[in-house]
Length: 175
Image 1: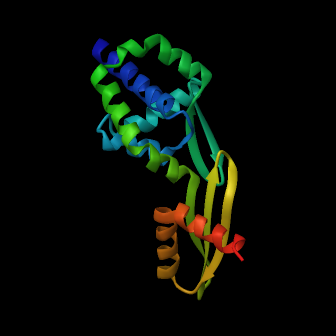
Image 2 (image 1 turned 135 degrees about the horizontal axis):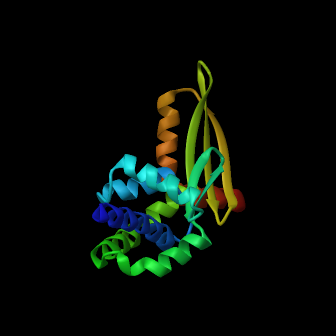
């Protein structure tokens, strides 16, 4: 039973450590992906721990534009600082390496969105956005005629948004 309590505490500290290292809110889906990719715990335990950390006010959950994000609170940071030595060095190193090699992708997924909806039976509305530091850089809505075209636009935006943004700016500012 004592080992279960230690594992529970270490897993919650691990979650706080990841949020602390990221230094910005992250979507629940991305957070889940980080945990599952590194085999830290299973999905159901993760969801339970996130809920417990939120109700303890160590993690803050926010909803903005129909997206749920989580971030560490001031109380969560204080608890992490008090008990950080209980996290294994191997796990901290693994997290540090994962975050440093994936930080660009994580930030890009937060600041670049691409969604589409059905406008009517023959058209789709594609919504492409780029946000930086809570400032919308660009927000484009396009009407296209096929589901495939909508998906292709979303995929292209997600993979090349900065290039596309720069091309649009250049087209609009050059004579």
